[in-house]
Length: 144
Image (cartoon, rainbow, N blue to C red; front, side):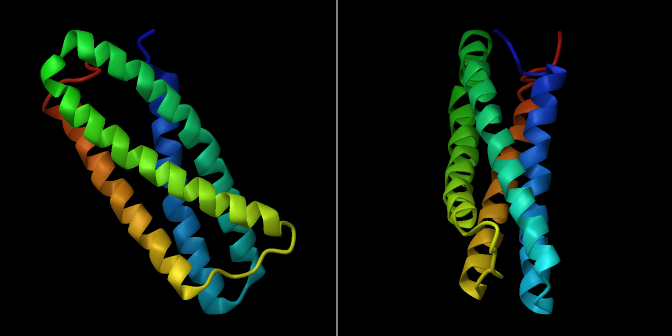
């Protein structure tokens, strides 16, 4: 089952890449303004990002099998990309679980949690950069 390059997989990888920074921005705005609307928006962004991120991890595991067969020299880079993004999803899953336990009485994030989320988003950007280089430099998922 080769999912890489399939429209479903393309859609899956972009949602966490958009929703986690949205969570971060909304958390910052909620902290700064004390407005719970931003806190609620951050909650929905983190939940959507985690749910679609888990599905993207599964799709990526299938992609790894195809890469191992077609381009064995790129496997190390694929594993690094997958490890980074899986780590981000796991960390965000823990944050989402904490938020879910508070729901519907959500509170603004502490400054330390916001800094942690900023670090996670930065780490995710590094993982996404590696993923982009897999496509551009290693031609992973590009039809021949």
